[in-house]
Image 1 (cartoon, rainbow, N blue to C red):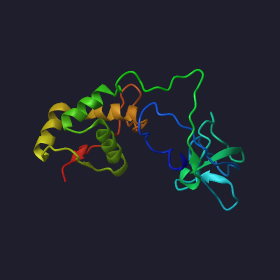
Image 2: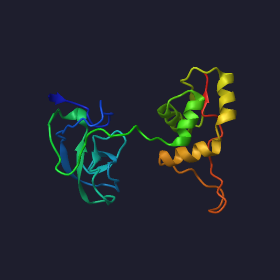
Image 3: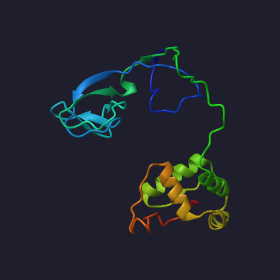
Image 4: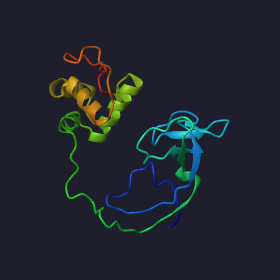
Length: 194
């Protein structure tokens, strides 16, 4: 298939689907420290610097951070350059879909079920609360009273935030000590019926 765009950065249509893409890359010099996979743009000196709206991402396969002045490959955004579909095999790896159902965090799945939302909706809501400091809009079918009752009966707020932080690679600030941590977890409810 010619001129297929925007493969990277989106979820694949089905597991085990194989493809290859042509990605435009350019050798650039770091104008500031850059993390592998970090989105970058070019400054006025045509050096790559971290920029959330930049034209590409730093080589995600680098094993260490890229220091100022160090050269690296910048992968350009997919919507800038068309790509071509390929069929390929790997001699040592079987990429057929997994042989089991997805195994999610038991506690988070339990809380999602109790609140009447999907696992992903719970994860997205927690990210929303952390980012915005307010409850996320409730996407389920429970009334406000039913939601509050489910929260009080079935959700351990401390465990929810602890498990979510582990799953989302988010570190909450510890206002206690190593032996007696007091994490700065959000105080608002996860969802709000609007």
